[in-house]
Length: 204
Ligand code: HEC
Ligand code: HEC
Ligand code: HEC
Ligand code: HEC
Ligand code: HEC
Image 1 (spheres, rainbow, N blue to C red):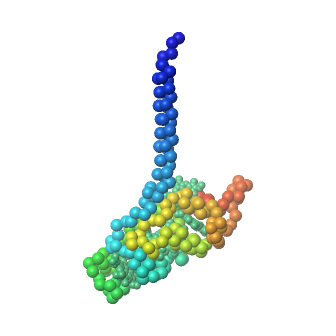
Image 2 (cartoon, rainbow, N blue to C red):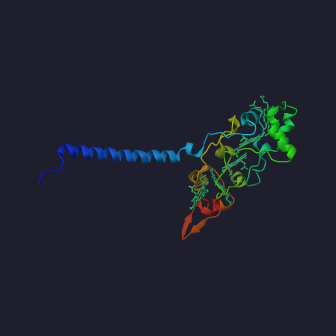
C-alpha cells in the first residue's frame, strides 16, 4: 500500500509535534515561575493609606524603635498599631498639624482606631503569633525586610505556606532556638516529623 503522506510531510509533522511539546513545557515552566514569583503575592506593592506614613522618616531618620508603635509584638499574637494620640502628641508640637492629619484627628475624636490598610493580612484559616517568633530569636527584618528604609510600607516576603515551611522545617540551622512546640519532638505513625511542620501549628 502506498504511503498516505510523503516523507517530507512526515518530517514536517514530526517537527510540528516537537515544537508543540517544547512550547507546552515552556508554558508550564513559565506558569510555575509566575506562581512562585513575588508578583503573585503582591510583594513590593504599597497600599492606599488614610495618611502617607513613612517608616523611612520615623523608624529610619528619627530612629524610633519598632516597639514604640507596635508594642504588642513582644507579648501577643498581633503586633498592634499605634494610637492616633501617639501621632498627634508629636505632630501638634514637632510638626504642624495640616489637613493631612484630619483622618487621624477624626478617629481620635470618635474614640476609634485609625483604619490603616494592611499589606500583610493572612487568610482567616491561618494562625500566626508574633511573640512566639520573637522568643525564638526571629527578628522583624527576617519577615518584614528593612522596614526602616521604606517610604511606603510594602510586603518584603511572599508569606506563602512554602515560605513559612522553609523555616519551620529546620529553624535550628538558622540559629533560632525554639522554646515551645518546636522544642518538643513529634512522632507520627512511628516517624519523627519536624514538630513545626504539623498542619495544626498554622491552621485552625
Ligand atoms: C511612629 C510609629 C511607628 C514606628 C516607630 C514603626 N511603625 Fe510600623 N507602622 C506604623 C503605622 C502607622 C503603620 C500603618 C501604615 C503603613 O503601613 O505604613 C505601620 C505599619 C507597619 C507594617 C505593615 C502592617 C500591615 O498590616 O501590613 C509593618 C510590617 C511594620 N509597620 C513594621 C515596623 C517595623 C519592623 C518597625 C521598626 C523598624 C516599625 N514598623 C516602626 C507606625 C510605626
Ligand atoms: C516570623 C515572621 C514575622 C516576624 C518575626 C515578625 N512579623 Fe510582623 N507579621 C508577620 C505576619 C505573617 C503578619 C500578618 C499576620 C496576620 O495576618 O495574622 C504580620 C503582621 C504585622 C503587623 C500588622 C498588624 C498586626 O498586628 O497583624 C505589624 C505592625 C507587624 N507585623 C510588625 C512587626 C514587628 C514590629 C516585628 C518585630 C518586633 C514583627 N512584625 C515580626 C510576620 C512576622
Ligand atoms: C516622636 C515624634 C513623632 C511621632 C510619634 C510621629 N511623628 Fe510623624 N514626623 C515626625 C517628624 C519630626 C517629622 C518630620 C520629618 C521631616 O520633615 O524631615 C514627621 C513627619 C511626618 C509626616 C510627613 C512625612 C513626609 O512624607 O513628608 C507624616 C505624614 C507623619 N509624620 C505622620 C505620622 C503619623 C501618622 C504618626 C503616628 C503613627 C506619626 N507621624 C508619629 C515626628 C513624629
Ligand atoms: C525564620 C523562621 C520562621 C518563619 C519564616 C516563620 N516561622 Fe513560625 N515559628 C518559627 C519558630 C522558631 C517558632 C517558635 C517555636 C517554638 O518556640 O517552639 C515559630 C512558631 C510559630 C507558631 C507558634 C506555634 C505555637 O503554638 O507555639 C505559629 C502559629 C507559627 N510559627 C506560624 C508561622 C506562619 C503562619 C509563618 C508564615 C507566615 C511562619 N510561622 C513563619 C520560625 C519561623
Ligand atoms: C508554618 C505554617 C504552616 C504549616 C505548618 C502548614 N501551613 Fe498550610 N498554609 C500556611 C499559610 C501561611 C497559608 C496561606 C498562604 C496564602 O496566603 O494563600 C496556607 C495555606 C494552605 C491551604 C490553602 C491553599 C493555599 O495554597 O493557599 C491549604 C489547603 C493548606 N495550607 C493546607 C495545609 C496542610 C494540609 C498542612 C499540613 C501538611 C499545612 N497546610 C501546614 C501555613 C502553613
